[in-house]
Length: 120
Image 1 (cartoon, rainbow, N blue to C red):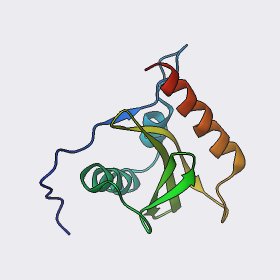
Image 2 (image 1 turned 90 degrees about the vertical axis):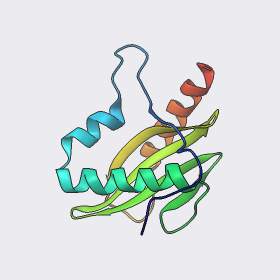
Image 3 (image 1 turned 180 degrees about the horizontal axis):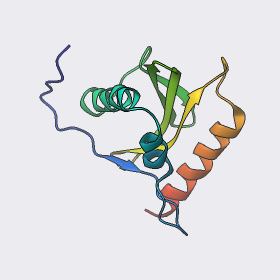
């Protein structure tokens, strides 16, 4: 599969915490193995170049929230994001252990999305 696209890639930004400046998704990525990071990065790049996408790579979680579904050696990684003013805002990342997206992870992403939208 080629990554060529006639369109400009959609910019990707990381959610940044207001008080500490930490970027939780970037920090999460730095803690997982290199092979998994490469796979997740490749999947994010596909979304940048080919948005809008659907299953199996991207699934809607409702209210403008989406998940990128990456299959990595240790399971299934999820990166939750929202399109905000033409940018892909990466809100939360985790390795999925259950069939359904855990409510706490979903709520965290929703709260981060609200915060990001309020800053613009």
